[in-house]
Length: 158
Image (cartoon, rainbow, N blue to C red; front, side):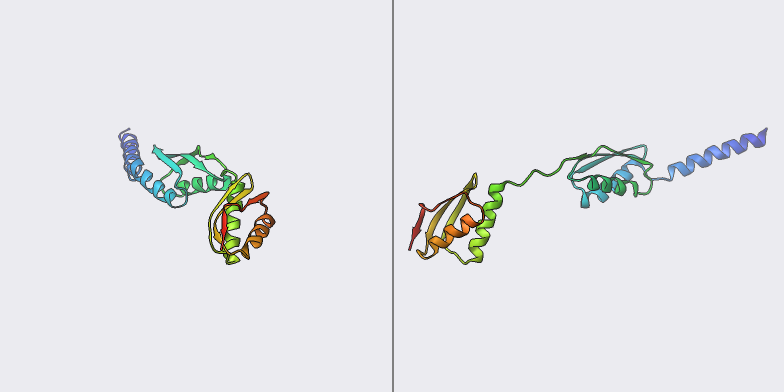
């Protein structure tokens, strides 16, 4: 009976010693956050009982799975509860895309003197002072790239 008692006590003592050798929740929290911060800065994590809970938002299902895999890879983590939301990025503003394309083309074509390019509903208003010879080229380039209308009445010619 004494042998059984000592065997049970030894087993319990060993279990306690080995269990306490693992990382604390605070240590796990630091390791998980450090891993996530580089690739998934919008993901938050918390740890309780070596179980990691993930929250926050990412743009793709792949990013959600990737964050979970990073957390699972931290030594000492028992499991991961993944509550990350996948929120796709908003669609790009067509007026902003048109404005950017117009400005790039003017630069590529070495058209100088345009101070501002304003785009609203694909209608372009230009201001500045340009060479008289460039005025038709400006209008042609701007309409060719997708502008519905080009207002050049604010452009001065030299």
